[in-house]
Amino acid sequence: MRRSTLKTPAGPMEYTITSRARVTRRLHMELDESGGLVVVAPRHWSKAHIDATLSQNTSRIERFLIRARQRQLEPLCFTEGEMHFYLGERYPLVIDPCPKRKAAVVFSGDEIRVHAGSTDPDSICRALWGWYQEQATRVLSARLLTIAGRADWVGDQPLPLKLRRMKRTWGNCSSRGVIKLNTHLIKAPLPVIDAVIAHELCHLREMNHGRAFYTLLEKLNPNWRKDRSKLRSEGNNYLL
Image 1 (cartoon, helix red, strand yellow):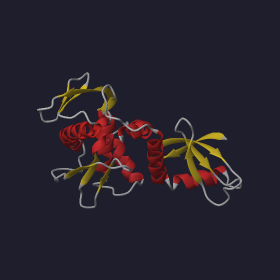
Image 2 (cartoon, one colour):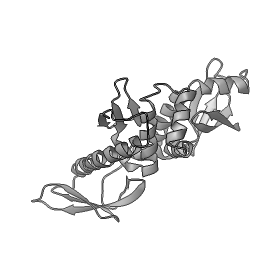
Image 3 (spheres, one colour):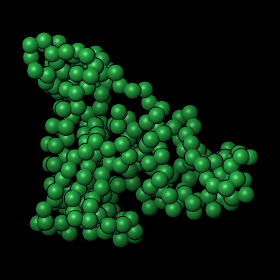
Image 4 (cartoon, one colour):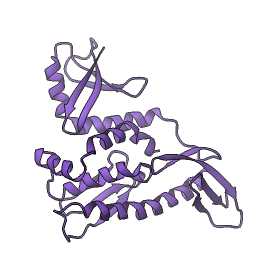
């Protein structure tokens, strides 16, 4: 096995190359114990051919990494003391049983406290997710307007925003200019949230990932490579 790095428009992608006798026709992907990408390639493939194949399939690789790393994580239990993400930081979950009170969530800056009529994990999950949705609506809408204010090609055009829980993508922009963001982004740091929004705003002018798109993205978010790298490495934690 040997380590390698592929240069892509979205930044460097590290991976390990290996081969197996049964892999003779196409490239396979898997994760190592630390969650790193392992590329299993036919023995007769050159390094240049492997790199070319990977370069043509970066979106597929990202989807694979999200799904595979997600499977490596322990599922959340929604119990007292469990750590949950909010805006890039992890906070302990504090459960306050209130049998006669409607479920509510209060964030103090040090903990996420759930006032719940039932301490059943499903009930806690529903209450917490309702709070996440409220915060996502507030924060992501505000960040969209802020980042759009720096994008001179947006102008006064309306910016329809939809929030959805998604498993494979952080955001997209339709041909009609509707921006869809993953509600799980509320668990990510603000720079990462801004990076995803900037990416989708650039699609209002450039609907592909060509050179013009990345030139536009560089103007709007000069740190996009660092932000994207962080989302690639940590994003699976936000999808729980």
